[in-house]
Length: 149
Ligand code: RB5
Image (cartoon, rainbow, N blue to C red; front, side, top):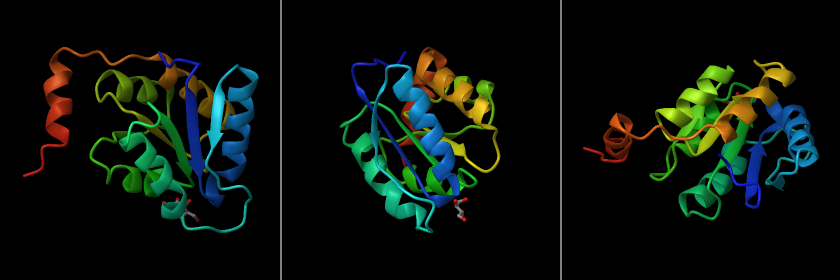
């Protein structure tokens, strides 16, 4: 369960700017403290420029969790997962959002802004923040993710 006293960073490119604005408004309305790390308009940008700062902040434990978005969700997720302490899960259903918390202990959710409806994205976001890591057999598996060969 995400602690609402902590800030939640969110970042996107132009492909998901409208979705980011929608989710930010929903979060603020529901009592979350949002750190909006851009982008701040629908002008074309390069998603790595927006996602690297958020992913680095999660990697450095400045924030416990974060939300990233791009058109497909894939570019953002690929950038974020370059950081060893980041586990970014690409989510397009509520169940995916729950599973990536329960099984992968994901600390970032990547949302494909062009492929999910706004109400689904908001449901997914709440599911992600409200679901805890299951632990148990998943602990060793998650530890192995950053054990590169
Ligand atoms: C931007 O057009 C689009 O390429 C981007 O949002 C994302 O889908 C990249 O993976």
